[in-house]
Image 1 (cartoon, rainbow, N blue to C red):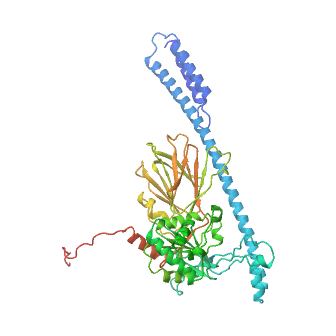
Image 2 (image 1 turned 90 degrees about the horizontal axis):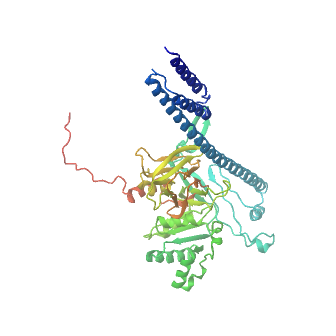
Image 3 (image 1 turned 180 degrees about the vertical axis):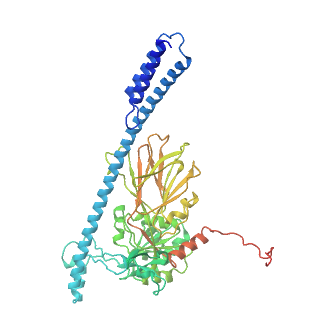
Amino acid sequence: MSPSKLDSTDSFGHEEASVSCSKPENGCVDSLSIFHSEKAVEELLQQTPVAGMDEHLIEFSEALRTVAKALRRAAEGKASAQAEAAEWKRRYELERTRNIQMEQKARMAEQFSAEKNGDLDCERVKNSDNQSMLQNESNEHSETGCMKHGIWSHEVLRDRESDSNSNADRNKIMRKASFKLSWWCNGENGDQHKHDIVSFERGNITTAERSSKQISLKWESDPQTVLILTKPNSVSVRILCVQMVRWLRERKKLNVYVEPRVKVELLAESSNFSYVQTWKDDSEISHLHMKVDLVITLGGDGTVLWAASMFKGPVPPIVPFSLDSEHFKDCLDSVLRGPISITLRHRLLCRVVRDAAKNEYETEEPFLVLNEVTIDRGISSYLTNLECYCDNSFVTCVQGDGLILSTTSGSTAYSLAAGGSMVHPQVPGILFTPICPHSLSFRPLILPEHVTVRIMVPFNSRSPAWASFDGKDRKLLAAGDALLCSMAPWPVPTACQVDSTNDFLRSIHDGLHWNLRKTQSFDGPRDRDL
């Protein structure tokens, strides 16, 4: 064997050693070593070939150069991916810090409210022997109702103008009708009413069967103010509204609020409707929940959506009436007398965070959604590209026409049309339903109520996305923008005709014709007795 062959072979052996030794511990090849490897290969190939050099040696050198180039591209791609991952991690940490601070503020507010309510309850116990002193104290402090198995406490709200201690100002105090909510079971002999949601007795963990429980509203003081919201441009609704306003005022002696448009229509009908009250601007709408005890809607589901959208915070109980409500007097008598079964319809709190925001606290005005929030591609011909996160966990990347985040009350609306499941409205959760996904294995999800869903438009998206809230208020989501959705703390209480389960099943049978088919004929062939 010639010395030239030995030298060339030896040089390749050293080169392999340099490549193998230049690999770091984490498996990523150093770019400098790759550069030296390529340079060594180039110098080797530029040397004058020695007679008798094997052809496979030349092929091996070219293969080594190709591998070095591939490793260099891989190292550059990994460095770019690490930089992008660091940027996303920074965003996650900012959002996580913001959520922790918000939870701490909420806990502090709850503790402060609990301490304040505890002080007020102690004063009521001390003065329980004197009824007159108790009534005077209730005028000076907000009352908090306590109950053994209740799930919500009431407050006596007062007009903001009555802040002085004079007797004239005390007469201006406006009281709302107080009520309490409690779980109601069919029958008192069962064991279900003995447990809360989760209990621990004698070493055994048990859970209550909440499916058979209904929420009952019982008035502790008579309602005084009613708000009536009507469907516009409907003759039958206008006639029903006139009859209902007269009956509530003359027979029940209640204060009646209507929309400005409805008051104009009532005054055009008769000047005797001057007692009807309304508001002048949007600032007064934000304080309606402090004055109204009950909301009555005349129309369909759209009127209920409109009623819920008017209240950006707490919502009074809503009594919906359809267009053909002839026996409204008996129904309202039952509602005003109580107790009534209600359904707490949860809402989603949605916030848009722009990429240009300096921090995660710079969000736009939040939206409260009763049915669903939809993120779609708008007029673009490209598929949507959305990155979805549940709290701090990555869920999936949506590629398709869009995505629906729905409440359980909205499960029978757009989400159902897109392939989502029908869910009982008292089941707390968030429905995650894709719209015409590109992957056939992409199926809907139902997430728990306590999570925060984050929908982000990545920077490599070919087009922006559009978000709409209950079918209105469309917002453009550009690359880098995010939409945060969580369960709102203010549900929409709606009165039931029977109870929540009966109303839900009747609505899917009558409204959606669920599982309606022609019954098979009984006179066909039958199985013979064996």
